[in-house]
Image (cartoon, rainbow, N blue to C red; front, side):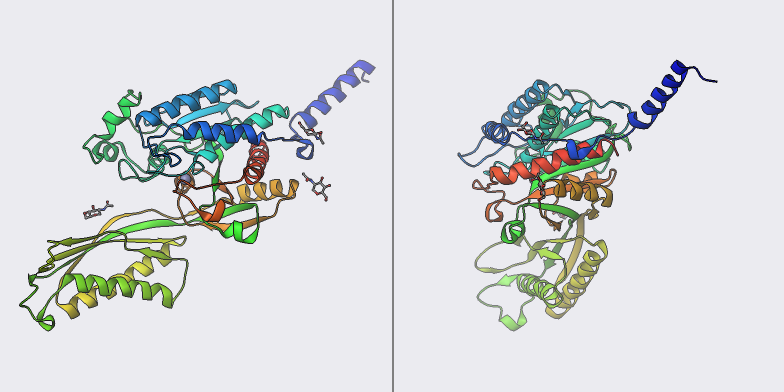
Length: 440
Ligand SMILES: *[C@@H]1O[C@H](CO)[C@@H](O)[C@H](O)[C@H]1NC(C)=O
Ligand SMILES: *[C@@H]1O[C@H](CO)[C@@H](O)[C@H](O)[C@H]1NC(C)=O
Ligand SMILES: *[C@@H]1O[C@H](CO)[C@@H](O)[C@H](O)[C@H]1NC(C)=O
Ligand SMILES: [Zn+2]
């Protein structure tokens, strides 16, 4: 027989076991985002710039980048987060959960810019994650898994000609040897620049473990105008397209522009031109998700009075499907070979790089959908054609991306703009998503 007090104890224990593990009732979580404060933070961050106002220029490890880092760290600390960084300057700001040893929920983006760029690209995902945490704290929410902001070092392909430096370093897709070889256009090497910015510890491989994050979420502006055209406030990314870059070089004997008749020439520029147009035709004939771009053309010797002797083209091919991307590349290269043969020029292809496209995690997407429903927000599942740090985070961690509209789809320009209403909705969905993921 149990005494009354023993019975009460048992009931209490039962209650504890059943309810302490239960997740909070998320329908009661009342998040109110302070959009004004967030927009103010974005504008202050935008002042760390070496460009013509209103364009923003903040290149990796520049003095503006260094100052921006100091500002971000101060903001994170003011919000009670514990801040740390790694040797390439990825900054982490952690809100410890009730289960601090469990893999954390990560959220963030980059805060570097291209030359004369905009206020929101990347920075929205960093400061938006901070505002999400501030609003969850204000709502009295207690996370189970820790929630950690990641402010990535240099996502843009700018100073050192390599993109996603921080995220690639974290997941082991960019080695220390590769980093050590990088130089900027003035001959400054990566390691010296890094040290100038205050990261003086030895540059070893990343120590990010495979279970550091149970999920990673990046909030970003869409950088195109699909959401704006459809009047939909939230995009949930399903796939991120990834690029492969090739260099195609054409060579001929050259010759005098006046004497050699056209039908006797072996002109590498004409061969390259025919190739460029045939690449366009390949895609137009069979419209897929692929994109191909010849963005750089070098003609040698580049004299107006001489037939060119060599032409080098960069060929960037992107897709969300690696097989389609490879197939397009093979078709293009067959075409290149037949054009070379017909025009009697030599042709060489070299491969610069290719990254695998990424699929966003269905479970993370499902949580985002529930979060949108709670705020009565319509959403569109969509592809991200630009790549982001999430392309690389997804190689190790279940990842998702939230897009918000940006005016006329403009990005990487000074008049890049996202409205406070759209920012509010994006951060609401982000905050709700992070809260829910911390209990999954
Ligand atoms: C949610 O919070 C806001 C501001 O913090 C408050 O005005 C509102 O009444 C709250 N709503 C509910 C349902 O608790
Ligand atoms: C790609 O490779 C070619 C040939 O090795 C090189 O000349 C070119 O600079 C590389 N391009 C990029 C963007 O790395
Ligand atoms: C969403 O819509 C429902 C039903 O119309 C309403 O009860 C609820 O308050 C709305 N929620 C928000 C956050 O607007
Ligand atoms: Zn970006």
